[in-house]
Amino acid sequence: MAVREIATKAYLDQKSGTAGLRKKVAVFQQPHYLENFLQSVFDCAPELKGQTLVLGGDGRHHNRAAIQTAIAIAAGNGIQRVIVGQGGLLSTPAASHLIRLRKAAGGLILTASHNPAGPDGDFGIKFNIGNGGQASESLTDRIYEQSKVLSRYRIFEGSYVDIDRRGLQTIGDMEIEIVDCVDDYAALMQEMFDFDRIREWLRKGHSIRFDAMHAVTGPYAQRIFVEMLGAPLNSIVNASPLEDFGGGHPDPNLIYAKPLVDLLFGDRAPDFGAASDGDGDRNMILGRGIFISPGDSLAMLAAHLNKLPGYKDGIAGIARSMPTCRAADKVAKAMAVPMYETPTGWKFFCNLLETGRITICGEESFGTGSSHVREKDGLWAVLAWLNVLAVTGLSVKEIAEAHWKHYGRHYYARHDYDELSAATATQVMQHLAGLGTELPGQKFGDWTVTQADEFSYQDPLDGSIAANQGLRIVFGDDARIILRLSGTGTKGATLRLYLERYEQHESSLAWKTNEALAPLVNIADKIIKLGEITGRKAPSVIT
Ligand code: VG1
Ligand code: CO
Image 1: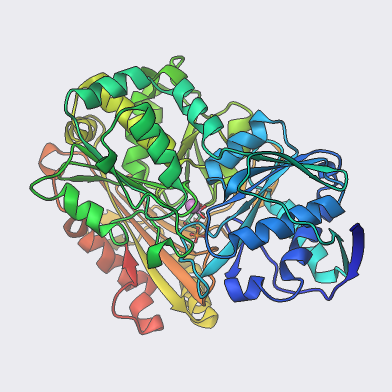
Image 2 (image 1 turned 180 degrees about the vertical axis):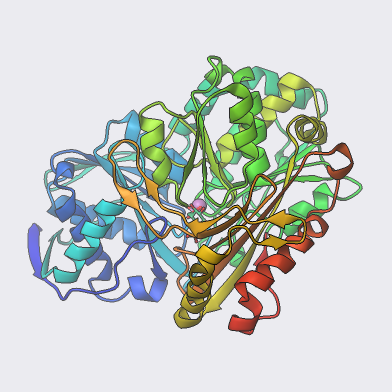
């Protein structure tokens, strides 16, 4: 057994999207497909040589086989040590933490996040760099270019590692360290939050329900909520990670986590409900009879963060992705800290976090996180909420209502149009882009367009520019309509329409979201002509 160089034929489709490379499992199972991609990563990240690499995944179908392949390619490329989560499991935030904690030069996270799993489902890989954050666009572009001309890869042939046995193993000169996937992450959470207060809050009879959706957070939730915080066993449901996520769609939102939503809106609702996604970086927050939209969750956590042990010094700044509602902007303004608006995708927050410009950030897609790691973090958000509840003694609803009363309320929804043809999706985008210059000044209902443009972003640290990051129609502070193409799908094109409406008057703070947004939906339809161009009568999913 030794390292061998294998001749290969390049694939031309290994382009990363919003968060890594995502394809159908069958695509990843083509001969040499995974090997090629990994070799392209190692070719473009020579700093990994002689260093430590973190490796783990969300446990979906093909995870275990892919872990073996990744270990063999790492050995073929002179990696000194690979740290692997036991059973091949690591949540995305836990992997980010491990990279930082163990001073690894990078990490590979095998996940397609919330995309369905199983033999007919999706598989994916995120490559994270030494700071624990996802590779920048310029790096993933270089990896893509390399993958198109690759003609050989280096692999340690015939290796097999027992990924279920903790401790050290070796293949060739490389060490493999199998670690418990929860230990270090749980210790970090204990540092950030007041576990005693949360335990006390639970002991006093407050109840929670966490839905792990048969994805990676099960073992984390079990350890943290049940074993460390003393929540009853039945506080966690769907806690065993399954290779097909139980046939479900582990996207924590009102549609895919409906049983949890029904419970929280029912007669026997617990005080608090939450869910996470396939790889553990997303979160949904619910209280008894209330859903907290992700943009609100970001704003509310930002407003209360200095009450939590890990954030005693307050916050340096806040960031949100462009389509995320502007609720956090109000908090930043009140606190007199900077507010940043970035393109969709967590990687754009990393330089802001790295340079201490921000402490907390979030996306409308159920992602919230802070400077503790360089990924969004589902369980972090859940614990932050629990800590806020424990410290304030208020219910989720009371926190939300007080917040809206103080800052005003942003009604918000995202309408997804899935599986469109690329041509149709482009036609819709082009139609709106073409209107750009004539929209400002036009009046629709009560609102006047103040700005209509395509969002682009310049990173304040490295100066890189990300263009074409979505089209926006802004009606001053009152409302926004945003349209962008998704970068995570594996079937056809997905268009996302984001709707935001801001109300301040006390009489307008308790509307139903769909009713509040109805006029905006009509305006969007008039301007964008989505229904007319796509022939769709309704969105595929509304979250
Ligand atoms: C989606 C979300 C985006 C998120 C990305 C990865 O991207 O909109 O906010 O960062 O998924 O999330 P897109 O391009 O499809 O809109 V996850 O949980 O993969 O790590
Ligand atoms: Co995810």
